[in-house]
Length: 218
Image 1 (cartoon, one colour):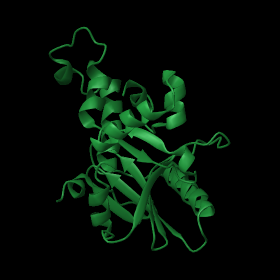
Image 2 (cartoon, helix red, strand yellow):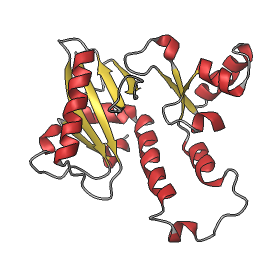
Image 3 (cartoon, one colour):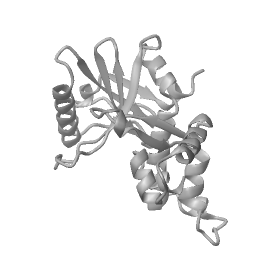
């Protein structure tokens, strides 16, 4: 669990075996299957890779919170939360926690997109070694109706605003993704954020906008 926590994208089975210096056998399978069955961990294949690159990602909220704020700490300030709302560890935590909320609520995301009955595959696209610009897509929903929702996950204290530079980043990501899928597949930029999207000259970059309220609809 401590190893899985160290990389938000997760690790392959081979990486887990090597980093923990354990045999890649039945005992490891038993542990991983138990974590999957109890929903502490999810398993996914990063976009564009094969099954042998299957990743195990820690998603249990309490485990993530414990490992981020409590594990290894001898003493905690009883006023930590009141005094530390703007501290970097808490700011980083909010973003990571929101990403994991989204990964744990894909069904609700599909409902909000109106594709509850469509067969989909969920994955992420992390930076490749040959990608100098550092392309990373937080969440991809590949649909069997020839559409891919390229999801940007943004925790923000108000309505999220797209500026010129971020608009260029979105276009580059969309173009790169479009070049990696079938020519018949449409790529739709989707914003999943806390409250909503501020309308401006660049807000048309997103086809769909999903808010925190949508993630908690039964």
